[in-house]
Length: 495
Image (cartoon, rainbow, N blue to C red; front, side, top):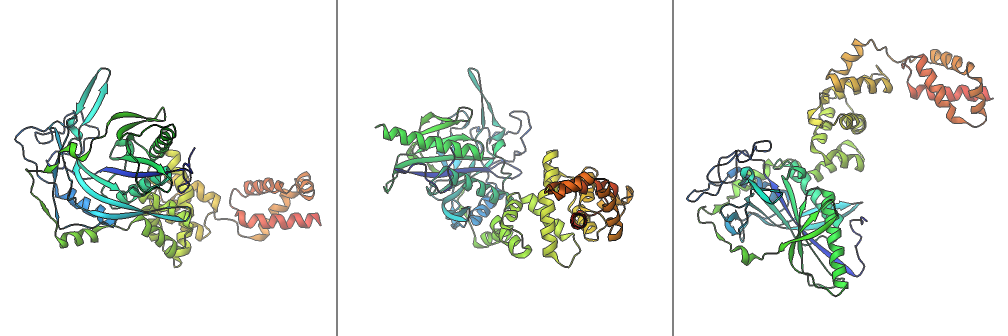
């Protein structure tokens, strides 16, 4: 069962949700060493050095680009940026942390006090952002039957953590928050946003309390969610589990639970550590960060247009519907493609062209992309080619049916539509009404039964007549011209 974003799971209990989003940053090198972060298809333990392997006596060096990306994210989330920040040691002993601690940030992070707006069916909610801070990623544990292997390639990759306030009240709100966060990170170019690859991950804190109570309940943390759907399902299961425990007189304990996707349940992993267990203290091998105002303002100027601003602009500047604007901006690359189609169109009425371009991109171009499992940035069909196709339609050089066929070929070959039209000898549409009326009369004369059926109320037979006219004209007739002429002739016949 999936609830509406603002519909409570239970009328007696309120669910309280906060998310910790971890995003690997798109830097070329790791957080504290020069090892490459391009390890996705590399053999295990090949992108390593003494620093990311946790060897004693080595000294880390801060990656300035990672710091900049974190500040840019914080600015996009309306956070405050302090003039002073520092790194801390966070101690715990797991195999994926070879040195026994993680370099992270504790009491003075790179930013704090921001927010993000999420919307659903016209309603908007403001979700607070506690902080955006920077740390290093851990190694990967590869569990086998009876033993565990460690791949250190990921260790030390810059990892940004975005911590929300406990402001979400339903699992679907949490999903909407994650989707909006991913959009923003991709738009500003700091993250790939690929949850399936682990470059964007999420831990969820969830608790329940009797409705009307102000004090928060005991929370559990959920890990191992690798999709938006997983986040929503895991939170719904865990919220219902906690409510059932309380109703049965049990007690919720603070713990970390793992989401088991194929079973649809959460299970205990370990008793949750508290801040004292981590024994935070300032990282002695790294200097504090002094964040100048010119640096912050320079990074603010580098921010690209954010999704909400682009959605509003598409509606105001191009007159596109809210639904189409939402779809075009959900995928930044698709929105960029659409804008390039409009920019490549030498027409006076750009608003009218934008509406037509939106229709063709969202219907025909997306259809071809899905059918061929190709991302829009990888297609041979250029925005200029789509603009060229729209020009041919504007000039009535081809019909809509012919345009779709030409587009299919251009998608494969990368040719301009006008070149395909010339090469295939496609003739211009028949515009002479007298010629079309003569062909229609011939079709109707050969289909007396169909005419009788139309007269008796079976009006859908007109589609058969349309097909025959199109076949006789070899697709050169325009449907929007043929259809009213057909109706006119049939009414004359009926009279």
